[in-house]
Length: 246
Image (tube, rainbow, N blue to C red; front, side):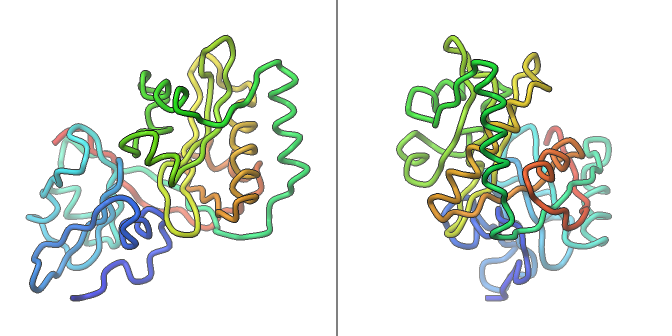
């Protein structure tokens, strides 16, 4: 079978290829020409552009929202044509996957800025895991895992909690053999308080302690800025598409 995503540097694609999370679909099981890697909100395309395959909606994909990542201009044109009126072109920001770049003392100071506000940071236990699933803003902190046991085996997460309320968090969106892809979210009324910075710093330090690489792919410029503040370096911009309904 033809090898797809051969040169991909996307952590979510690695998850699908390794079989830890997500799925890979082909246009033909015997002699495939196209493939899509699907994990959570994301769908990555590779191979020959195909309208029929672009319109295929995998059972593992969300029903009302997806993020498409095409591998070529030809795939971009096909997706824009197939989903006309339902698709929005966006720019995402890939960060370099570099080891030994993180300044641990700086990350510890980021944690202290949160603790000084008398807002404790907690690693996700079973109770907090399911609390994250109760609100839309925090769902993706644990949403790619079927249950806490799966998360406990593959994931790690940190949340800022005060008076029983989760205010922000940084957690595992996906896991491959040597690392994770980080998901960061903050409840709207607690934004710009440094909570995402502190939670992310605590998660990065925990990953480093366990020998896990904490990968970061930025959805927007704010996410990119936070990543760079934490020590990541910018790699490249790339085209993606948001599709809001089937």
